[in-house]
Amino acid sequence: MQNSDTTKYIIHAKIKADGVIERPDVIGAIFGQTEGLIGADLDLRELQRSGRIGRLEVNIKSNMGKSTGTIEIPSSLDKVETAVLASSLETIDRIGPCIANINIAKIEDVRTSKRKKVIDRAKQILSEMFDEMLPESQEITDEVRQSLRIEEITTYGKENIPMGPNVLDSDAIIVVEGRADVLNLLRYGIKNSIAVGGTNVPQAVVELCKKKTVTAFTDGDRGGELIIKELLQVADIDYISRAPDGKGVEELVQKEILKSLRQKIPVEQAFDYYQVSKKRRVAIMEATRKKAGGKSESAASEEIEAAPVREEPIEFEPVAEPEKPKIIEEPREEVQKESKESPFREHISQLSGTLSARLLDVGNNIISEVPVRDLASALKDANGNIASVVFDGVITQRIVDIAAEKGITNLIGAKMGNVVKSPASIHIETSSDL
Image (cartoon, rainbow, N blue to C red):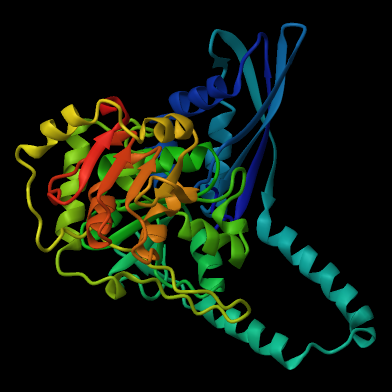
């Protein structure tokens, strides 16, 4: 994700090639042929890793066996370094198998462009201000409150990672992609988010995740999916939340943010989708149990202070171990023998592929049907009339614990997750057992 808040200049270049080339070919040539050319301090990979240059924007079109296009490189370097970096691009003479030529068109000073916009806007405001009504007192206080929240952004560690002011003091944190995401959450009163700056998660964030209950909250695009995959490989996260498809966290309004966070799923329900290895699954679950030990639900609640919309606090509930578990030793096999014609076969068949759950009474009649992501909340709100739960999802330790607490006798899911302890009072089956 490009951090527009620190960009000073944008290098604009034009490219021509005698052959058909694509964007990956151009990016590979830029990184490969400039490596070591102008010294380690201006190495493109290191500059991008440290955030001193942004994402390379490459647009290529091919016609009649020729390719033309443009390259844009955001830079937070000074004038001299930016100019040296730009000139190094013109040394590239081959892209893939094709002879190519790159020419610098211009170096745009972003701050100059912004100043021009400020001047134009100021003229417009000056000419219209006397015709506009003064804002209501509530609008004034809301605007002041939001500006104060935005000013509260701070940094973490030697890498100056953007974060909200409550990250270090909160038991639960939200990991987002970039600084703009942290600012947007601050705008609506969520003060415990921290940015990873895209892929290549900083080690400081990895260490912080070991001590906190962590929700990964990423954009609803391919980039957000890749960041979650990396977090699952290197960090101990507990929940996953995504922005609506095609939207970035920085673009969301308060209602969308709250909805996305409430629809978070436990990390173990995403193992199959993100292709997490068995070894890594065990490590994540072990880390989750260690972090959950000794934490109450209130200790993991999110701080939501937004004024315009009154919402319930977002609760990030650790996966806590049941206080009085009993390990099933023999009854499982006997139950399977007696359930050759399971009364739940039809329910699990109808739910297959829907990612939904059915709450049944003692007569196996449907009380309600909810999305799997809302199953834990639905069970917590139950008033004791639920006897069985059938759902198209992974049976996790958290679901087992809540079911035991609510006196549910049958729990039937699509797959068995990492359930270490299961009360003898609950009969657990998967769709393959029916």
